[in-house]
Length: 149
Length: 149
DNA sequence: GCCGAGGTTGACGTTAACGTAAAGTGCTTG
DNA sequence: CAAGCACTTTACGTTAACGTCAACCTCGGC
Picture 1: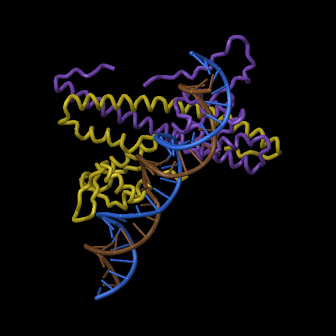
Picture 2 (picture 1 turned 180 degrees about the vertical axis):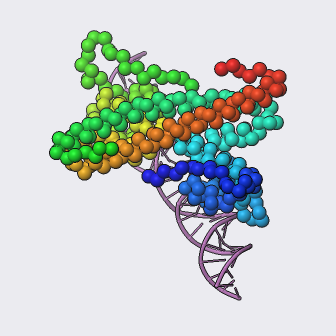
Picture 3 (picture 1 turned 60 degrees about the vertical axis):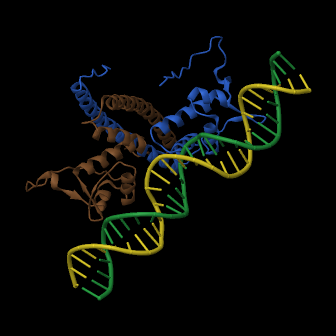
């Protein structure tokens, strides 16, 4: 319903970008999820924030990871799948050849998934067009003016 | 892994198209799901096959519905959402104006969903490109030839 | 000094979408 | 006619992804 604009506006004042941190509540509102969700993702190995004492402190890196995670979810990937990619990405610098090969496999897999989804979306789009036009027909048949948009 | 080609080849011999029926097992193999899944969809009001005695008999119409249902699922819609559209579509001819307005709302909603998914896919695609190219770099740094495709 | 706003860790509850096992029906095939 | 195969219902089990308490800390402000 409400469109969030994921803005990344540069802070005036030239703060050293990397120093910005977030509380769990801030992140939660930012992405419209609950703190519980964020803690759960941590428990599942998708996030690993620092601690100031007992409380979690999130940095830019964590924010990005959360963003990617949620995007993956919207695309229907399971948390396990997302973790698989994210963790391997982090382990890349010292990853051995086998691991990297595996990573490439996974990526190809995801890519195929995306392709199929694109096709599905195109098809679904047509279906919706069809249903909608039929609905409009019936409506005007009833002498009701269908909404323009 | 295996690409099914959802073929709808016209039967030679000019059979009256509408007469073709399917068993639950046939449909299951056709779409690579289990019979249990198909029965579950029926129980959830997404399918309503005829019965020859006790056994279910599916027609072309049912096959299409199952196809649409599975497509919707791949796009992350819940069975409830899918049912909402499918049932209203069927009720269209005698649907009153209110119902149809509601249907249009739902359709707009789904459409918005698809738009967001398209954007997500584009973004995700870039991420994958990025991760992959970095993985390939590291691999060749190790003196290993990364697979071309 | 206490209060409210936010944070924390358990631990149990819930929902969706099936899986799985048991027990029975019905055809057709050797 | 027995065996096998595909179908049926009933019912309980399972997994993912959180929701929902309860009970506790901790900090800034009045």
